Every structure is written in structure tokens, then in C-alpha cells.
Image (cartoon, rainbow over all chains, first blue to last red):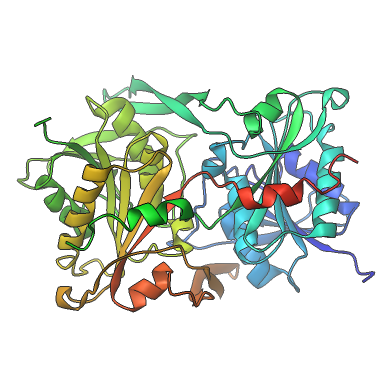
Length: 258
Length: 258
């Protein structure tokens, strides 16, 4: 096969995000690239899909690169669905999402629009990777990410991924020479402890801003949090069969039919 | 302990949904009930959270029941976070979400606001159950659900659930005498094949409606889809550690550090 692989690129920070632009530039060196990305930021959208309103997708020209680009009014999962069913001529060989501005390690994977796009592609049987850099800033330094994004992408194209598994890749926010390499990890048991900032509107009505502290409860040295703290790029294979198979036997001893 | 269990009730169809009202009536017979539910329908919201806008929660009085109720401007996951951190005096003993108008079996768990609320409670270490009836209609018949909702809830309060596991319960849309009982299942491998309905605005701009066909690719007799087709209530234990542990060994053989 000499045909270049067809790579679908998306994200959740929106089509103009520097992280997406970096990802496109790396993918242009590997394959034929089609971008279908949200027209505005969609962080924290989880696996939301648009059921009750209309979707728009418009061809756009963001730079001089060879990629084809569409800006879409929907969520990251909508972008992937629309790309596969309507906008692409053939099934892509790969879907990459990101590079997210901010971590999607540990429990963040649940809230992540970046990862929901990768998971949506996985559901469609397309090998998929979500990439995130541990820097929330719009003008984060994505240059050090390029090498790892390229290596991991090429390995996925070479080895493929089993059905039902996608990769969650997080990159530490340190300069390239300090990155120690890549570690395969499990998702750390960590969560957010929310602190709601309670305020009053000028009219005297209570409202809240969601904020919180991230708490890592897991001291395992095989977790993504540990790897990132040590200066490694973390790669967690994740699945969308959520069944807790190990608990089925126990549940069968409960009296649920009384 | 003679104190009644504190039960947090939420959903994704909104505070006035008949499915929620049914769930509240059953929970009132089991414990002390606090409802924190979205002020409008949130179906398909997945695990979305509100990061970039304000949240409101208002005490409301929907009927003559003993429960305390709040209507919240956020997503189902927001409702659970806000309930735990701001609105409740103590940590609830249980969180129940639903009864959803429509199935959350198999891959639907990924897109489900109902299940995201249960998962959010699970992340907080609270035993949690999501209930769904296989009937999308607003005036679905929830009466047959009551018996199973009550039994399963009481068993969860009695046996508790391990950390990291919540229950996804789906109820077939048949009359109570035809329900064969409860089956513990795994999530079926099924997905949606989207069909976008492409239209033009009065101004001539293309837009899309998302619709699709549900396709079950799994002929196992231990799946939720099978159980529901046979007339059973399906109970799938689900986890939010998404790590595909079984693939880590294989991934470690890849050349990701070249």
C-alpha cells in the first residue's frame, strides 16, 4: 500500500487553537489530513452529542497547509460522527484529537471533549489517539510535543490498535531535553475536590462558579500521574466497554429477584 | 443506625420529568430525599460539566412530597457536584439518577447524562445507580418500574458497592407481569450508525440533523441488550477506571521511545 493514510484531526479547544494547529502540522508529515473541529471551545463537554439542535459544518481555510478543514458547530463527538458519515470520502485510517491545552490524565478522561472525540472514533472502529499537553495556556509551548506525537502516531499506524481500545497520551509541560521518554500507564485513582465560589448577581440572586483542587489518591508507580510527575509522556490504553467484569460474580449473589 | 438513609436524586430529563417524579416517589418510601435536578432536559450531555459559565440552584416546590428539591441550571454532573459540596448537610448514602426516558443500555452509557450523574457520585465515593426505561415518550408508563427500582435500591443500601463501581439499570418497556426478573449483564458491543439529515436553511445554507440506527453487533447471551429483548431488567456494573489493563503488556512491546 503506497497510498498515504487518511487522518481525521479534531479537538475540543476549537479550530483556531494552537494545539490543533501543531497537531495538523505533524500529521501533514505523515498522511493526508482532513480536519473537522468545533468552531468554538468545547472543554469539559465530556461525550456530549447534539440531539435537539441543528449542526453546521463549513469548509474553512486557516493556513497554507495541504489539509482540508471544516469548522463545525457541534461537540467533538459530533465532529467525528459528521466527518465519518458526511464529510469524508472514505473511512479514515486514524483519528487524532488535540493537542489539548491542559491535562486529560487520570479521572480527567471522563470530562474530556478531546478524549470523547477519540472514543467516538474508536466506537466506529477507527484507531484513535487523544493528545494533551499539561499546560492550560492558549500560548502553551507545543514544540516539545511534536516528536512524541509523531512517534506514537506512526506506531499506531504500524501496529494498529485492537477494536475497543484508544490511547490517551499526556505530555508533561517541560522542555524537550528534560522529557525522559514514554511510559505505558494505567489511569490513576484521582479526583477533583470542587470548591464552588458562591456570589450574588447585581439583583441579589445566588450563583456559583465551579472550581476545585485536583487530588491524587493513588501512590502507584504505574499510573499516568506518577509518570507525568517524573517527566515522562504517559500513554494509557482506554476502553469504552465500561463493564466492571470482576464484580459480576459478586452481584449475582445479591437478592435482586425478591 | 436508625437514621434514614440520605438519598440524592437527579436525572437528565429535567426536574419536571415523569421519570424523575416516579423515582422520587419510590425513594420517599426508603429514605430522606434531596433532589437536585437540571431545570431543563440534558439528554445526550454525556459527562459534560459547566466550566465557563455560572450555575444557579433554586429551591423549588414541585408537589406535596416530603423531599427537598433544587432546580439547577447545570448538567447532571454539575447537579451532583453542587449537591455534595454546597446543598447537602452531609454526604448522601446513595445517589440515584433517572428514571431516564429511553434506554441507556450498551454503548448509550457513554452518551448518557443519567449515567454521568451516577458516575459523578461514584467518583465521590457514593454508591450510585442510574435507572432507565426503554420508552422515549414523555408520558411513558413508569409504574412497572417501581418494584424493580425499589428492590435494587434496597439491595445497594444493604450490600453497598465497591469503590469505583456504579450500576446501570435498564427496564424493558413491557407490563409488570411480563417482566421476567433481573439479570446481571455485561455491556453489549453495539453502536449507532448515524444518518445525518441534510437540509438547507431558508437562506440556502446547509445544515444537519443527527439521527441514526442502533446496531447490536453482539450475539452474547450475557449482554444487557439480550436480557432486555428477553424481557429482563438488565443490571450492568460499570467502572470509571477506563484503563484497558489487558492491553498494557502488548503496548509495552511497541517502540515508543525511538
